Image 1 (cartoon, one colour):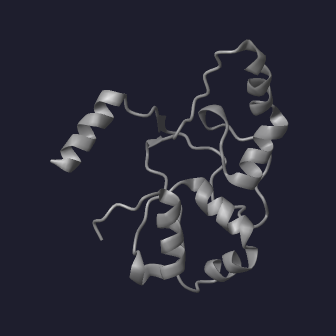
Image 2 (cartoon, one colour; image 1 turned 90 degrees about the vertical axis):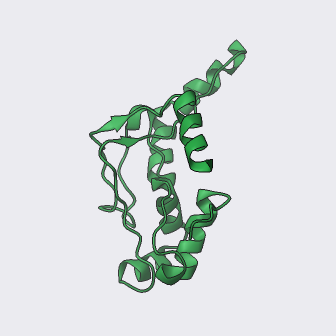
Image 3 (cartoon, helix red, strand yellow; image 1 turned 60 degrees about the horizontal axis):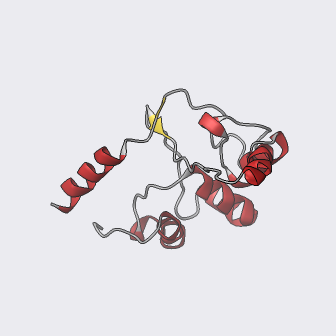
Length: 143
């Protein structure tokens, strides 16, 4: 406890593999649980039945979305922006990978394996803190 994992994915894997004894609580991304449940439905059913670690998704109120902006400097790449925001790709991103669209939008339904585990809408969302606030938080953690 107290040591920072090198990635949220590695931390999530350790939590699932080691159970509550190894990692009693972790914080990760919504999509990590979605992708894991879809990749191994049999194991997900065992977890839901109460065998081993049982992940629960908690949404702080307000919560913060992790955004990954794409800045286009070549007009020929505009087609890529169109593709990434197309309804078909947005539905695939949500239903198969747990990635919400711009500002948390959802297109399409949830896969039956994970239906009911995550809300389709999150009502209270704040933007990520500015870079200077994040740097100040990091300085406090290190100091």
